[in-house]
Length: 616
Image (cartoon, rainbow, N blue to C red; front, side, top):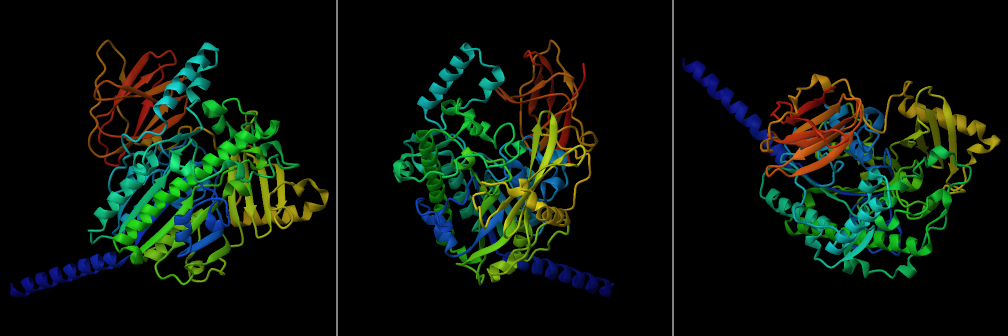
């Protein structure tokens, strides 16, 4: 009997010591401050741009490794963010568009913060880390919360916007076009930083940092700023930093010579985004020539002011880290989700396979890394971030990851971990889908456009960075380049593996195999009874709506007070995923605004469910 008791005591002691060892190991691990900035290209002082004022980011770079040639996997928000957060390329995540929610097509992916949570970290995310509509609450220890009572445009701008929409309707403009139009693309607002939406995101992160500093548990704290994404609306003092007449303009404000139509597509490399603002709704497309000089200067001034505003918010985070005496045990990483055109090739957005859109700022400060304060010229990619953070934190590196740890470069900035970086972008031209893959080597950018149905090469592009760093001349059209094109094509497919055809992707997601195997929310067909009010509470859920009707369906959230907010209209076999809570009510209406029925969100063990809108 005594022996059994002794064994139990010993067993309990062993378990206690093991748990204590795990706890102690976790507490010794470095914290992670993970800073994302939307639409931030390498327009920073630390990247050699003398005209812009970014003292805080430059300060970080002076104590970190600055990567001169880092590339995103797809130059648009959602796919790029999913790629960096999962360590996988878009062809593996199945996220190629803004309209696809990651969990609706790849529900079992494990994100960076999820992985860190599984190994003892406390993870919090504020602002835009994943794409705006889907903060992916399963990645965080606490539900994501956008700032409240933090306006963007002034009241005058909002009132003028309503008048503009009324005039569009009076002029007979199509309603879908009217609904896309936003207020002005640029505005000076006279408010303190903390009252601005991005300033409020910074404040959220600082409050959380102070709370996390008192815990024994290491933290993964993510702060995602939205500026310098359009609209360029920031406090006056940041506009006053610049004289727009002295800001240099792009010298190559024309489309690349010899580039195929697919390179920019119907919407000219995302230019539709700028035309969604009331003051640029009639801006001429890049194929028609550049914007006027006055417009170019206004937009570039707005971008510069926005970058300086975000630089100030980043400075606040770094200062707080210092004040809390956590700098020496915190990995700091700063990244922009893709590049952005400031008049280059006549564009003012992203969404191409070119250097200007795929090259991104990436700055990593690892405590006591030998390379801190230096620059790295090696080719690196966003898929490399996940394994890098794992290695720096002493965590196991998941085998599924497609990137390579950058730890060797952090120790020795002259090191090299790969021979090429690869980006991609889909196009739909005249009803046919294409996928373009870009291979960036030390000297060349090679782009291969494939027909998604047949797999045939539709077009090729080749830019020699030794002779043409701005990528203004597609030399693939020259006959003498055949051997080089063949060599680079072989290198591309050796690096990532050629997709199988037909290659099924779409600008809007269709039903995936996993959607109907998830728990289904009950459909309540419309009747004479009063619609229930929403009572959202409890753990966040991700609900994926699937429309089986032949006609479009409008998805409307019903608030506790009866407020109705339309989130999306989807066509037949299209989906829409959104974070919501048990007790929330979602109304479904037809194209005429008539109620078809509703769903009431119910708790699910996996925090995911499908809501199938049935055929009549």
